[in-house]
Every structure is written in structure tokens, then in C-alpha cells.
Amino acid sequence: MPDGPVDLPRLRLSGFQKKQNQWWRWSKEVIPSLITPYLTYIWQSVSLQCAPDLHSSLGDNSLCDVVGPKKISSTQEKRTKQTKQS
Image 1 (cartoon, one colour):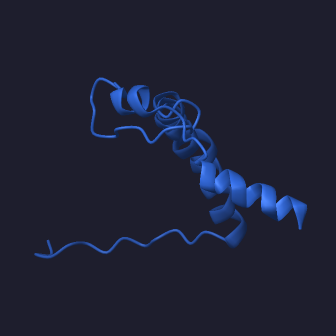
Image 2: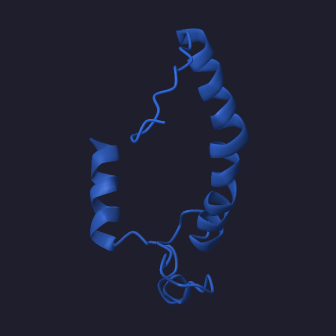
């Protein structure tokens, strides 16, 4: 018996087989595993209107409740009107 690891012959995959394996893994494992975190993020960010607290285990987004969606300041509003008139 050899003392070291035994080198077994490796099966060589064609480029097509590698692509098929990658597609299968992404469609069956990777993408499904990202659905729940993505939907949680969308929910916590109030449809991306607020930056969610990613460290909160409760999903509480109290900062969003206080601040609310971003509002345009009067200065930004004036610039927008000036740009449209030009």
C-alpha cells in the first residue's frame, strides 16, 4: 500500500458538459438560494425607497419609518425647473 494519497484518474469534461453543469447548478441551486434574501431586502427597503438595516435580525427598518422616502429639496427643485426651461 502506498503511504501518500492515491491519484485517481480524473474524468475530463468537454466544454459543453461544463456549460450544462454550470447551467444546472445555477438554475437548481444558486438562483433559488438567492430568492429569499432578495425578497427580504426588497421588503426591508420598502421597494428600494429606503436603505434597510442589514444587521437587524428582526427586519425592523425604524430608520426608514422616521426618515421616509427621499424628498427633493427646494434647491434641487429650482435647478430641475431651470434645466427644463433651458
